[in-house]
Length: 104
Image (cartoon, rainbow, N blue to C red; front, side, top):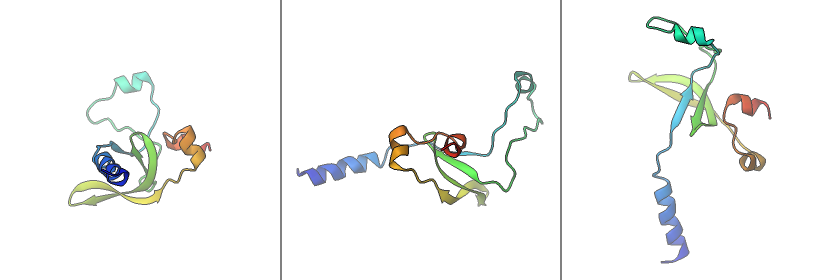
């Protein structure tokens, strides 16, 4: 087997590895007391408005932003921005959240 076909087989296997994709609606800080008082009917307010972009993470690394959409009753995200990283970002490790990205 030549190196090219061996590389293609390895790449094919890598492309099938499942990765976790997460969308962050918002975040907030609460005291321990507030968290302990959470119950049915409690509304937790986040730092984002309904018009703000949502952050999309792949394995906890911020990779894109977008707007929430629904399709046949299922929530989704329409990508509006793909985060571009420089080679220095890749060497240092991709930002893990929007605060890390905005500090660069």
